[in-house]
Amino acid sequence: MGETKEYARAMTFLIKIFLKARRIILYGSVLAVLVFVLKWLQWKFLIVDNSLDIYIGLIAIFFTILGVWVATQLTKPKVEKVVVEKEVFIPQPENFVINQIELEKLDLTNREHEVLQLVARGYSNADIAESLFLSISTVKTHVSNLYVKMNVKSRAQAIEKAKRLRIVE
Amino acid sequence: MGETKEYARAMTFLIKIFLKARRIILYGSVLAVLVFVLKWLQWKFLIVDNSLDIYIGLIAIFFTILGVWVATQLTKPKVEKVVVEKEVFIPQPENFVINQIELEKLDLTNREHEVLQLVARGYSNADIAESLFLSISTVKTHVSNLYVKMNVKSRAQAIEKAKRLRIVE
DNA sequence: GCCAATCTCCTACTTTAGTATGAATTTTGT
DNA sequence: ACAAAATTCATACTAAAGTAGGAGATTGGC
Image (cartoon, rainbow over all chains, first blue to last red; front, top):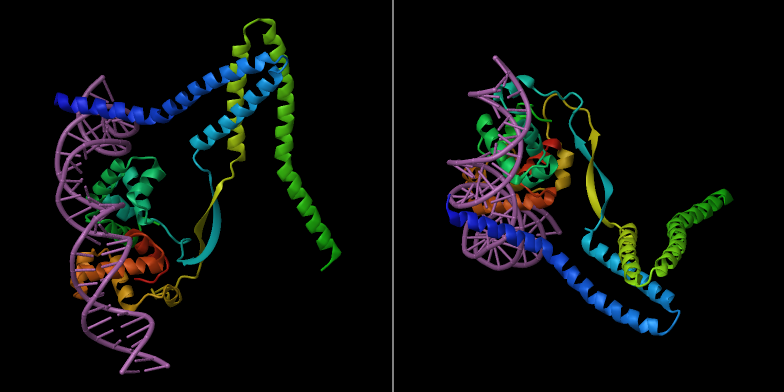
């Protein structure tokens, strides 16, 4: 293990933190400026007596707006799915039974079979990673391993064989 | 058109408006309560001298949070249409026959269908090129074109859909 | 004849897929 | 408890798939 590698890792780590913190630093700065403005406003309003309520009101309104703004900046846009149904014919899934014999012959692990099911549904590695809460690396590992066990060389071959052997729906 | 129907429409309309306004009424009530709380806090804090800054600070923090909350409540979700294929079960013929109806719907050319068959057998582009005496470029063109017609984004999806629609063996 | 569709092929990319290797954890069977 | 198997993740590649755009032949039908 070179020290250079360790150093590079540390730097990468720091940069990541900085990037994450960048927005926070920005907000912090903005807030700092606001404190001065408010202090000035406070002084100005307090000259006129009994205007504290107005001052408080302005503060409240302003910070509410600030809050709204911060929220819109921070929250990812909500996505509402509108389901549009589209009729598609599919063949008898009611009779479908997994060919356990062929499946056991292949000696796949649970996870590998699980991944294979998604592969056979046309999922990309990224899709599978998201579905199973895995990293793409892990998905690739599983996929690669099941190719060896299935004796195929590509996704397409795996799908074809899996469907032919009836080891996936 | 019956009058009952008209009446029902009017009611539906009113209910909708009430439902929309309900949230606003709720927020209004909450704000009203807050005003009292703040007034009380203001009075309490002003007994101790020089604690105005703390008071202002609390107001600021509170209303920022309020703003964030309001924003999350108010932001309308972006609408995204997701086409979901509704499975319709059809009687399965014993021996395989190509679903000519679905095939024609896709409007594939002869060559595209021919290429699709090989894709569905797990052939790589190079394999297909060799089988049909084409260049890989041509195969890629056909494959790419049939993806558009089939409304899929990858080989795996094409295979899955082609098998499901029974437009390939 | 000619137009439109089809079929063919190309270059130049970008994006995914797939391989090899190593390694840290967690599960599991005995 | 301990070893083997399984699961997870990473880096660093190479290979294949996929996209975009253009362009020259061929062909069937009006």
